[in-house]
Length: 169
Image (tube, rainbow, N blue to C red):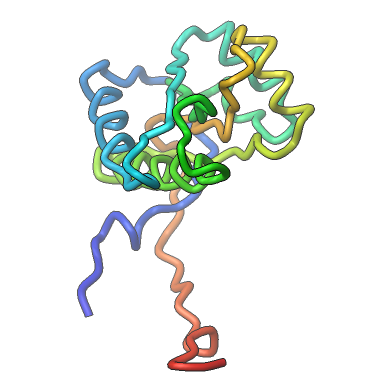
């Protein structure tokens, strides 16, 4: 069975080389993210691209599980705009689909990244709200630090036949 190599090779990478990512590559990551499906095609996502080293360091200080952000070449904060949401409660699914597309394109570009959750933790949301002056209608879902990998993680088979149910439980 053939499966997209980006799906098979996507791993959580938390260590990065000290090397910049070209703007055109970051644009490809964002383009891939915005190709995600969304409820009623509302596309409620917004993205904050952070390259400034001081700001990356601040993110790592205010988010308890984001220490690796300070070493990333770029961090992309995926946010949902509640004012663009027609199907209430679906922004999380829409922005999660965009995040997965982003992560798959990261692998395609030879980069590494990790999904750092923010929502639904109100303290983590508020820390980013203050740091980036986010309006009330914008909710940060996650942070995706991206860089050239400084660690190797091989393929891990996560397929579990026992979790598949046909026609009924």
